[in-house]
Image (cartoon, rainbow, N blue to C red):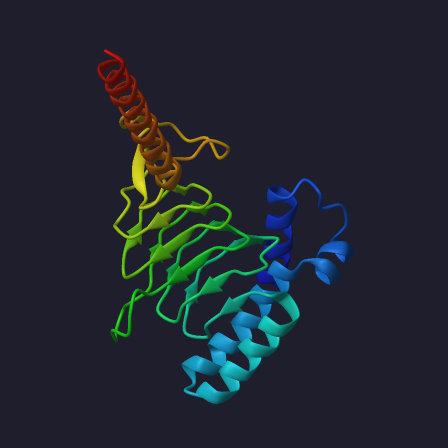
Length: 220
């Protein structure tokens, strides 16, 4: 147990340049507290002490702002950066060396039973505010861009962005014209607004031309 805790602290040092001292990490990192509390809750869940498991997880949620269902299976060296608003569902499976940021949801898409939450394989990164929904798999070494909504499987060594999420890089090569840029992710709502604005301008121009033509006919 203490070996795993040391490993968790070492991961924080590796992933967060703001981390300075062990005591600071132990006392102030909510993501670390949530992971440690989940191990207790998960152990209770496996022993079918479901009520106690949920109590532990809800206490952890109250203090950390991170909700991890006791049934979720989480691998080693899992790192939650900042973490506020993170939600991890009951049937999630998370591999080793996975990193997620604040506001991430690993959730379901309905009231179906059985495996209904995502599987994140080893070395996956899910950026701020991303939503990964349903019984889908994010392949090894893949990245999910900030604010993306992923509803389909993502292959290994890929980068997915947008709403809905689509693969833009795979095996180091761009797929299509869009690369990963957290400050310039695809925005379909903005695209539609721009298209409608262009159509309105075109219609206004046509109306002005018709009005001008009608005035000329009236004067002649």
